[in-house]
Length: 418
Image (cartoon, rainbow, N blue to C red; front, side, top):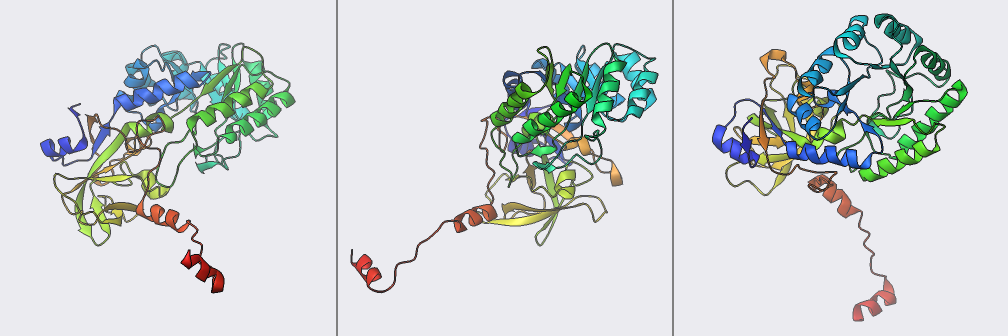
């Protein structure tokens, strides 16, 4: 990959035809060090957030030696770019062939499950292996998250004790419990509450856990979403762990994805057409902007132009390059009023679930990559501001200011004289 000081340098040199993932390895390194310095346990990167080879290599170079994988291709990716790293197959539903390949071909020993059927499948596909680390995923509330993940996976409270006991009896190595409080969790105490629920399940099962895995859900900064300080999340987790019914050797794990990589990449797109307040781009919901369409997150944007731009900002909506009308990002995305065809726009905070969601629908989807050395648009780690303001948000904030009217009658007259 070529390296540029900032995105404008890339535009001046290349005028790229395709979208460009602007990657910031130094930003990723800061996030990786923060988690390793502040989380009192093992940090497993959730590969699904961004499976780019440069991400795996950069994290491995920073000492992140454990990875949460969900498929054999992710296992192969980690094996290639982080040789010797430990992997945990944390998808609760896996094919027998995938389990067997992970165990026999890649040395994976950690497997997640949330049913007795999956436990039986794991044991059968590994030939009744006794050296397994079996992690039971528990269903917990997702009230504090912006994207709930409670509907698909996780053993319910009434079923968890029996499953925990079965997993304990099935292995001679580690047995653990995990959960996921939901993506972009905005409430640090959600982790402590989930750990309390996990502790009750362990007590009812009459077993001790060798591993407590608090999963992911750690947030990043987006317009309209200002998370609490990440230190508050660590405090909640460490308090919750101290209150759990576990023994002294119990391991604490976490699986950050978004919080590690969101700041570390953005996407440079080109405007192909301007139609009123709609901008038609060369990337969209079938590419890097899935969340901008389906969860309607208004990602931060910046005009990248070699020349002056209007000081007036206007709200725009985006359309992607495919012929599908669902390829629409409502925003609003605030840009200079004179943005037009041929201009480039940087869309920030897309290191998580950006290029990872890319498809080849309609023949689009090819994305180039380049390293840039400027700061991200926002940061949880002190690399930039923690608040992404918009004109609309600023107007709403100004309306919150209370202005007292002058008293009427003689009292008002006396005040004016003073």
